[in-house]
Length: 198
Image (cartoon, rainbow, N blue to C red):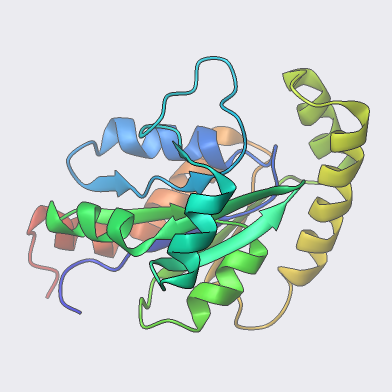
């Protein structure tokens, strides 16, 4: 596929993916496009359908998954999440770098497709820091927090798997993490802006 490669961002909840992504989309609003995921969970306060997620019923999502309309999907905390082919194509149709925010299961599923993205993992410096960040958000029940931390621990181990990610960013300093992310994407950014890289 010609043009800039899509980017798969992964990492546990609380690692800082969303914050880094927001910065990237602010600085390069005409370069990146976010592939909006589908979910069967209920919207959180302030979340908008079609912007944060496509909030759909389990039945509708299972039907579309069965029809082959999803690049990847996973179940987490009793809810389905997934990236539809249409969501990625909508971003590519605008000649933008498509950013996919997926979990580790999603990364493994995308590896089986012909998408050929850059795989970037964002990690917190430690599980302790991650727990502090999640508690500070105050959006989790104790039970969901325990689940998220267990998943994060498994993710941190799996992310060390050779060849799974092109880059792992340890987010212990937001500015440093952001400049590492920008540097990793500089070639694709130039392509998207139409700057000759040769």
